[in-house]
Amino acid sequence: MNWLVKILLLLMAALLLTVVLFMSLLALALGMLRWLITGQKPQAAVIFSTYRQWQQKTSQHMRSSRPREDVIEAEVREVPSTRLEDKR
Image 1: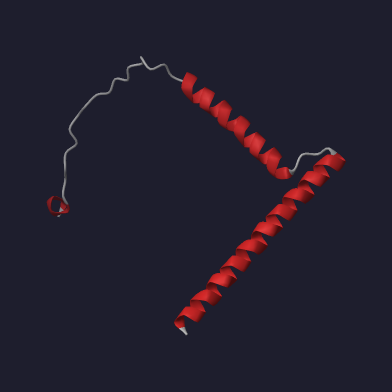
Image 2: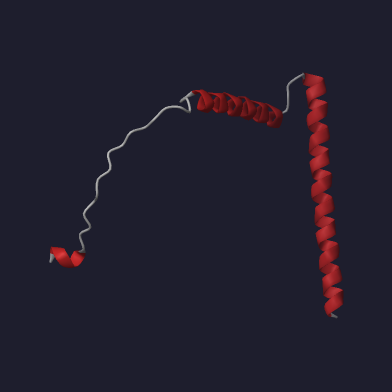
């Protein structure tokens, strides 16, 4: 009986995976058809291209913001440690 439940769960998982895959392919096909008819890119393609442009712009900005030979000077001092017992 235990193996029967495992097989049933496996079949249900395979069916769910097949349905999700079919729906994804259908959405892709409809998006491509709409792109061919209207000439507008699918929203996902626009979002990803905008993200790639932003990523390239910020990576160039981060590289050119500060040269590597800059030296940052800081004064070092010891911070006194006070305990709760000392304050009472």
